[in-house]
Amino acid sequence: KFFKAALERAAPAPGSADDVRELLSRRKSSFSGHFQWLLYHRAVPSLIQEGPQCGLVALWMAGSLLNLSQDVSLERIVRVALERGYTAQGEMFSAADMAQLAEEVFQCRAELLSGGLEGENRGRILRHLTAGCPLLLPYDEDSNHEPCRRRGYKAHWAVVSGLLLGLRAGTLSPACQEDGEISGLFRPGPACPPPAPEDVLEIYLLSKQGKSWRPQLWRYRQAHESNAQLTDLCPKRAGDGKAYVVPAGGVRAGLCGRAVLLHPRTAQSALPPPAGPPPAAER
Image (cartoon, rainbow, N blue to C red):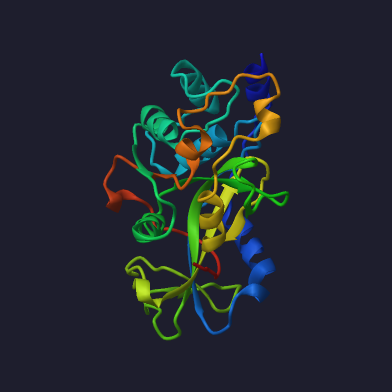
């Protein structure tokens, strides 16, 4: 009954490049004028979750970036997750289960990362996002929806659909195009190669999650630190009398340092070029 009522109330809203432009305009004063800012972004629709559905809602939003032959409803995602035993109330405490669920409902390829967002995974994530593909990221959610460190007590999921990169001055490709409204902000042109890793001095992630209609901009390091300390199930949730699906090894085994890259089955070249507005990033 809960899922039926929640699905009936679910009403997605289309994503827009204007949402990101507004966000970057508001945050512009926090971006260093010593860098050139390069934005990779593809708009995703918004959907407000009902109950602990954050992972399933994030997965639904990510589907819009996978060149699906037909739309997949949130209702189908919830149904398959319940049937496979990945969830009981809408929760997703296992990134491995999330990857398997994504492959089944979207017929995509899911790549499960472990060990956090830094190290070798950082380059992998940056290549993935600059190619216009989505990242599913578990983290602890603060009251403003940004990543924080609560040992997993506020575990939440977001879809990351873009990057704002602060580049060393003079290293921006001539193929990049300056934004018409925000000076100092550039977008990749059709033939614009990704920047060299050594020229990227700051990294921000563009994300959406199921408790707000609006996109958010997170420092990369902030997201990494939150993701890397997901170790415990919130005692309040553990004692609320409801059944939850928690993997062997608990939240630490299921979410800590984990993330999911979603790849469309089609060729990478078939992806539309990333679109978008303005600047910013940090490691």
